[in-house]
Length: 88
Image (cartoon, rainbow, N blue to C red):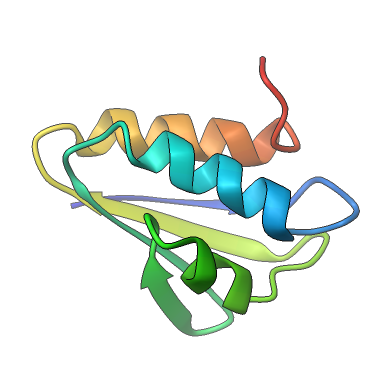
């Protein structure tokens, strides 16, 4: 299992559009992906799960993955969060 913690950098937090971007990117990976915030853990491929985390500006998200491409998945998702959900 690979895990990385990142802070939400965009001021609006993780609302519908950023959650959609996370889910779309996570879907490219075969690994199981989990996102945790404030003790709540949800499937990283579930838009509703991610939205229910209520992650605001500067909230810490722990992204973890388990599977063949876990390192690439965690790196890509963490980078997306760090770049305020914008393309690099």
